[in-house]
Image 1 (cartoon, one colour):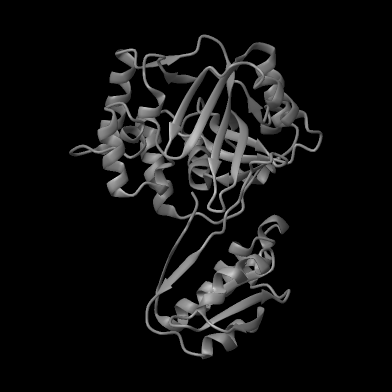
Image 2 (image 1 turned 135 degrees about the vertical axis):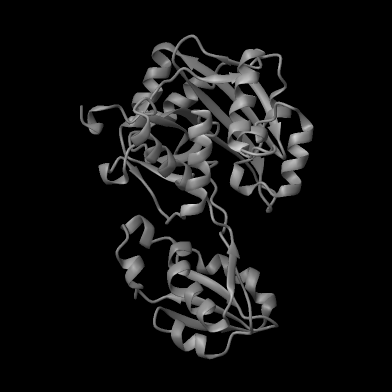
Amino acid sequence: MAMTDVPLVAAFRGERYARAVSLTAVLAPPYDVIAPAERETLAARDPHNVVHLILPDGNGDRYAHAARLLEQWRGAGTLITDQAPGVYVVRQRFGTADGTTHERTGVIAAVAAEPFAAGRVRPHEHTHAGPKQDRLALLRATETMCEALLMLSRDSTSALRNGLVEATQAEPTTRARLADVDISVWAVHGEPAEALARAASREALYIADGHHRYETTVAYRRENARAASTLALIVPLGDPGLVVLPTHRLVAGRPVSDEVLTTLAAHCTIEPLRDAAEVVPSLGGVRGRGCVLLLGGRRAYRLLRNGALPPALAAQAEAVRSLDVAWADEAVVPALTASAGAETRGDTPD
C-alpha cells in the first residue's frame, strides 16, 4: 500500500494520565525550550512530570532510565490507555506582551510519519543531526512519542475549524495550567473523532514546531514498521489565536566592521536608524519584508529584502523563501558570523 493510500491524520488509542493525577503538576513545555534550571523545577514538582521522560536524567543510560520510568508508571496505573481510538481537542488561552488575550484551538491526532517527498507534510526549516540523534535514541528506548508536534492546516473549507467549534460545545474532559497558559481538553471518540481526522487530512500539513521530532519518527519508522505515525496538535490557519511572535538571532563575537554592510547590500536595502531606541518601533515595519540589525552600541539599521536570494534559500519552496527568519538565516547571519568570527545564538524551533 502506498503511503498516500494511508490517511494523513487518524484517530488513535491515546495513552494519558489517570484522572487522579493533577494534569497541571505533570505538564511541561516542549523539551527543546526547557533550560536546566526549569527542568529541575519541573522534575521536583511531581515525580510523574513528563519532563522525566522527555529530558531523562539518571546514571548511565538516561534513555533506558526513561523507558524504565515509563513502564513503572504504566504498571502503577499512573498512565492508562484509551479503550477505543479517539482524538483530543485542545484549547490554549494565553496572553502576549501587548496585553492581548488569545485562544488557540486544535486537535491532537496521529499523523502519518512519511518523507517530505510525499508532499503531505511540509517543513519550513533545516534540521541538525545532534537533536535528531538524541530524539531517536529516546524513541528507540521508549517506543513512545511523549510530545505532540505543532502542525498547521490551511483548512480551506473550514471543515476542521467547524468541527473544533462543535467539539468544544460540551464541558471539557479536563483542565490544566502550564505557566501562564490555561488549557482545556476534550476527549473525542467515535464518529466525531473520525470526522475531525478526515477534516484534518484533506490538505497538506505544515510543521510549525517539531521538525527534528518529525524527521526522527520518519527515521524510526524505517526500523519499526509499527511506528507508522506520530502525534501532532493540528491547528487551522484561520484560528484567531494562531499567533506567530518574532524569531530573534543574537550574533556574539568581535565587533563587526562596516564591510559587512557592503556584503549585505547584495540581498537587501539598508536604511540607517537614528539610534538603538528606534529598533523596537521599527520591528513592525519590517514584518514580511526583512529585519532590523543592531551592530552593538547605538548603531542600528533596517534591512529590507530586495528580491535577491542566496542560492541555499532560492532552492527552497516558496513557503520557506517567504519567511523573514529563513531569509535572515541565509542572507544576514552568515555575513555577520564571517565578519565577526562569531557564534550564533537564538530561537531555533524544533
